[in-house]
Length: 423
Image (tube, rainbow, N blue to C red):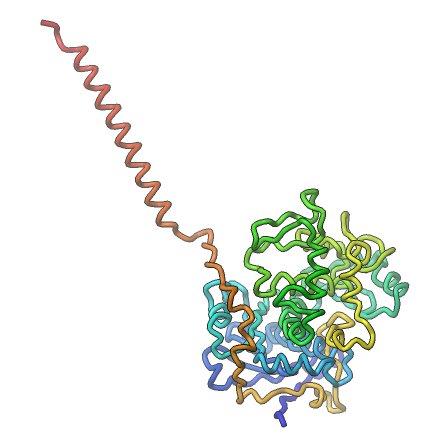
């Protein structure tokens, strides 16, 4: 029987999101994590930078991550994980959400997180979450911008999310933050890789050939991908597709392109991208931010997922009774997990937290899916020094200087010859 870490409410306020209990890390994670917690067999690792000053906004941000994870795993919030097989896969992979303050603090390509991905010490599957990208009151969440979190039926979805004031919601009009909250995307990336291993024919993220892969290929069309140096802007007339990733670090071999495509499709279906502000933010990679046919556009050029790639819309519209779809969220996590016991704490039966003192040693076959997908060398920063270029410039300057001296010497010699008296 796993021991449990209980969760309490922030400040005791009824509307406040629950907050996880954060403990000192076990020896295996000492020096890596400043504090740790765990939800539904997923470990959460906080750096000292992310932990911040007690009572600061940092606590609200990293507890938002914990709540979103709980809502992804128990989306209907009935106290029972939606797909126990996916939970077991996450446990067996020793899955970890590594939470840092800024992405710059964990410079992808040469940082500790990247080293974990290559060396797996401690063995496991890691997902980086940067608190600078965590925004609990984002307008992405329908009920933060005046809509319903889960309208019942097509007509209700159109009436709620399609309302002008909801589609055009901003900080000024709705009081929510215009900044995109990337928490759901990062959590979904980790969970979807486990789900894809359990339900591979339908949801495989790390490998191709699944129903998801086929639908995303149709969405991509001829727009290419950044990692293949073939990216074309789907919001331009340079290609006919609707989805493309320009980031060369996001590759198919480690599941990034499929995980991101799944996020875009699912977030669209759940109303998370259906605002004019968000369309402008993502249109260089994803143009189908309108969920259903007959819904009004949200931004000039925004397209409808159900109309453009019906197979992808069908996929993220989960089939009732299909065990392979049990893990798929039916509503967008808003960071307020509501499965509470009478004492205003998370129901212990809902969280099923593993004992963090016992670190499960994931087997190599559990987490080596990307062994043939080595990280590319880090991209030099703008202020980095290219020694080769400097040497070349110096050589060119020397050659030019010598040529100028030679020309000057020749000119002086010619003058002297002209000035010499004839015999």
